[in-house]
Image (cartoon, rainbow, N blue to C red; front, side, top):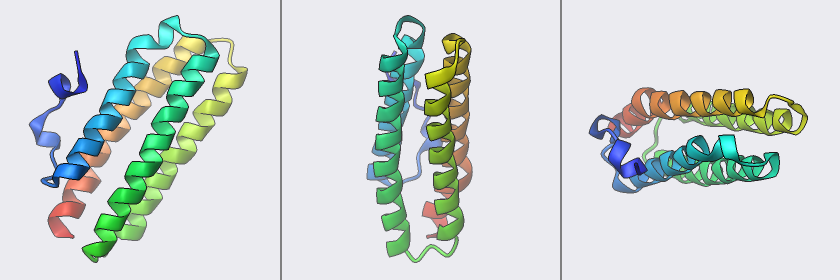
Length: 131
């Protein structure tokens, strides 16, 4: 199953490039979810780093668009992005020391799925409708 197959149209923001980037985040997350049980800590770390790098790119791009729209709650939006990145970096640190890789990877997967969908539904849709 691809991210496109699992994408729910209710998650659309109405901004094509933002929705495409959200879909790419979901694709990276799904790759992580499908493979973490069979991969070494180094490969899991690499997938997590890929997610962090793409999320950083996406957040910068999204924040630029919101700034161009003079979105008045941009600082709150940026703080949510920074919180996600901080949590992701914490997961990377935990991966280096954990003896229970499967449990940590499952926690990472659950966190990102919940965060990505909730962030889109509660913050991004509002921002792009108001901004």
